[in-house]
Length: 559
Picture 1 (cartoon, rainbow, N blue to C red):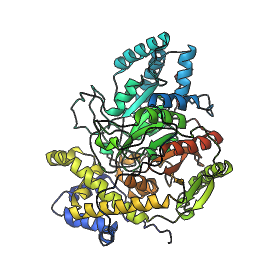
Picture 2: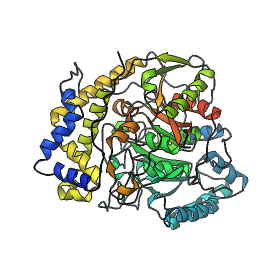
Picture 3: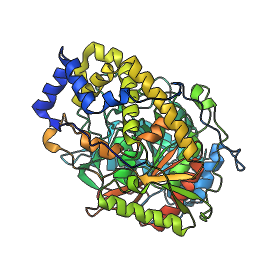
Picture 4: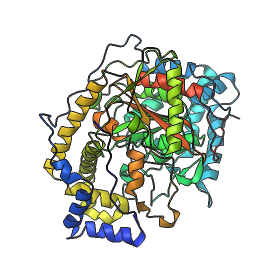
């Protein structure tokens, strides 16, 4: 089978042209125009592709072998931080560094929060604003920091993450805050915490606020016309990626070692790669979605971003596990980090399709190849795997996610579609055009693709690709605040991403160096269901061997 990928056939639109295009999509001639758009995108060919005997019902993912080192989340989080190696730079303030500083008395959560509050005011003010936050309550955070400080002084801290600052994407509920989803029209205040917020609070983490995001998470580029574009700490003229735009940026900028994102089509992994941090999309259902307003039921995942693999591992340990408020989360094996500290990779097989791997910008391929050598030097073996059907993957994912997002936003669209950003309106109009047959057809292919991937992974333990095919593109400043429609860039960002969402298999993005412009490159590791521990283990090996850069926009809280 030969590797092929159809080029994206769509003009780059902004300004008057984009407004006219969106208006036409929503008008009486909309169906004719949309039919041309989706025909050019290949959906007509997709409709004719056989799904064999596949059912539209996704069979539960296999649980894998019983773990030998299962433990509770708090114990595993401590283990992950205990194994934190020395960061490449003293300026990279990891969760382990916060814990050590509190234990040693060098600082305390109150002093940390005050420094971070001052830093946020500077970053969010003036002409050089980074547009990181949608909402904050500094006095509330300070009160929580005072309680954490008292616990550290009394030796009664809740967990290894007590007093560690975190930030939540404004797609998850936090009691007392509006969950905007990056919109301007949502105004209902959450009366209870999402599962991820509740578990972080139970661990004593300090939630600094709600992070900026692409409106309703519908675009991987990450621009938001209502709250401004979140800007990349490595170069504020560059995008962060989306849709967990500022969730990655705040970690890169040093405001927190851990944040929460959500990933329906790369929305954790893409910004992690572009901002030079670590991001984990865990197995579908591994982390509870309770308290996350539904946007894309079958492909959505909530999960952690972090400064290092240890930060993500600790957050994963605290967040993962069954939750009675999310039935999907109930069918999962015990939580574990088996072999996490073992840097000897002998016997592990890394699945690699060379043609697919190399379908990215040259600097991206070079940095990712260097990371591959780290794995083989540690004993892993590369196994050539057949190329994916990228067209089928793209078509299936597009139909499912846009159909579900349009249904999730149905009432709001009927009230007044003009409240949405132009790119959101365009995607929602296309989602409304897909038929029930299109959706069922895509769901059948989803199951088929999942079974094929699970079968393929009998031949390898992990599959590896770049995370994105390019580093962070420039923010199209002249098009702001509305932004643009740029499907070519969207495809570059999502080329290696979609299969993880369709199948539900876990995937980890981690930084592996910089391109010639000093912009981060990300490598993606994808594993079998519930084998996050293996991805994190491999990530630790790569991280320990490669230098880390500090972005231009960066603050410190412990110095």
